[in-house]
Amino acid sequence: MTSDATWTESLPTVDPDRPEELVLDFSGEVHRIAPDETFVVGRGGDLDIDDNPYLHRRFVVLARENGLWWIANEGSRLSATLTDGDGLVQSRLAPGARMPLVFPRVILTFSAGPTTYEIDLITAGEDHFAGIEGARQSTGQTTIGVTPMTRSQLLLILALSEPVLRRAGTGAAEIPSSQAAAARLGWSITKFNRKLDNVCEKLDRVGVRGLRGGRAEGAASNRRTALVEHAVSTLMVTAEDLPMLDDELAANRAAAAPVTTAPTKVGGAAKGAGADRA
Image (cartoon, rainbow, N blue to C red):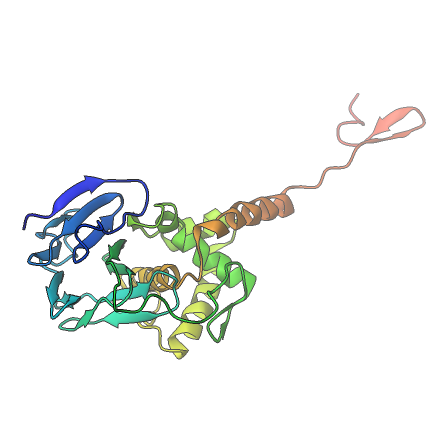
């Protein structure tokens, strides 16, 4: 493997002099992969990801074949999600599966343990799909696809997704616990868990995987991670929505604050807290 690795703060593009290369961007770490190379993502791969014991040493493999770049899942337990750059098309890459990269930008999202990763894969896109017709999912709305979501349900998803969204679109982030996410919103843990159950049930009914399992340790962490992976990769929530979290927390703190009244004067003497003291 001899791909060039550089660092950037903006989304890179394919070098016009090397139109067949594949550009991989992981949190600003950019690899330019030549068409005769194979690139491995995993704990022991060409991409230097954290030493995460939940991540396969050899997870996904990128290689060019018959004029197309292909991605293959060589792991035995983990799945990955592939989304086009506009968030309109999504595919799940199960263990043992492979598929071509047919859009100029594909967002690769996967979770290993409590950590979710996001990687941009960029090609020239010539002779392939340049895009797809359809309205992009707008942020801050109450629906995702045909599944209705209330504002409070979207706030719950946003609180769990906040660390990932603050990584500027790429990289890795820890998913918060239910207690931490509830505190971020100013909710009780009972309210948070009830709404989390409702959200997972709704999305499970329309085919989103990994949301069953209840609140047992391990199962609860897995479903939060699966929820964030789905929400971020489908643009259900984006970084533009993050101010909603501060608004919700401020509103709940104000509602919980004790109400104080100013003392009133009766016969020239103040009557109120401490007014009767000699």
